[in-house]
Image (cartoon, rainbow, N blue to C red; front, side, top):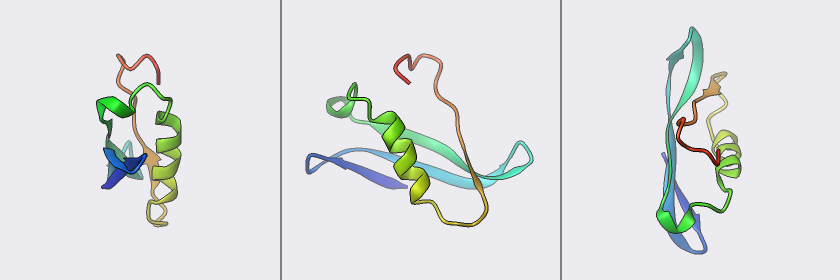
Length: 73
């Protein structure tokens, strides 16, 4: 689990859970949440990349979905 800090303040969190998903060893993205003041700035793709870069190098693949109502993503 990682805190998201933007402009010096807490702005959300992102985290994964190591588990087998669809038969693959995965880092399953459990939550990526931004506080209201940090939404709508297009941070989603950057946050995904930053999260992936900080995961342990244990051979697991990042895996996740985007909520269907999240039109920006």
